[in-house]
Length: 297
Ligand SMILES: [Mn+2]
Image (cartoon, rainbow, N blue to C red):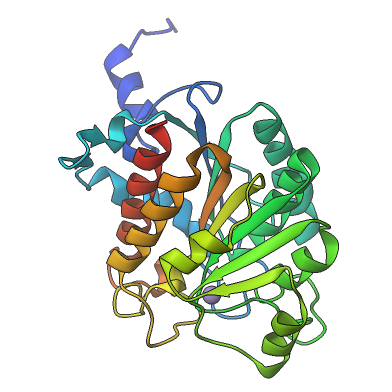
């Protein structure tokens, strides 16, 4: 049988998998590398965050991306969508695979943008950042502190212990939380006992809490936002912030610290618990803002 040339059909096949804002490029192109981490093995609630990278990309295709106030368009931002890491279900394998990629990307001078996944995906990336840069400041937008020693029972490495493990294992790490609102007594007393953990109550406080000269990594748990705006999360916590507040804080942070930002992640979107694509679309919109701001160097 002859091998038919079918160029039109091949084009369609290449476009089956959605990319962030439709971007097709090679991973070595672009200042920012966008990478999906479809991992949800350490969640203590209903899993499904592994589906978020794909849903967030699909939602991004429906969004308009031009910002008239700056004249910038997220579709033209200086990034590449590198696809997803392979599905892994063991946190040690995730640490090896994602940590290795993060070291490579950060060593090259690029910014790593990770689309989770449950909050544990932050662990290997921040460890890699500390290996590459030494001193790292971790800015956390999250309803929760994720500072439990074990959660669920006897589990040391999970989405609810991720910040505790990082604080304990990474020397020279500073953690600055922006307006958390859900605490266990244990977490509060741990946070209060450490001078490398700061809780900021507003954007001004956040910026003044950051020391000069440190690389900055930004971790956004989508449950920072009120469940009314982000229902597709495993641990919905009432009385949260609005998306506008989050965007204002992110713009202030990225605007002021752009050249120091080593990486950003958005985690804990769970499409299985979402109301339509509400939460995935919010995450996609946040990526639009972040990529636009990071590109304006
Ligand atoms: Mn959370």
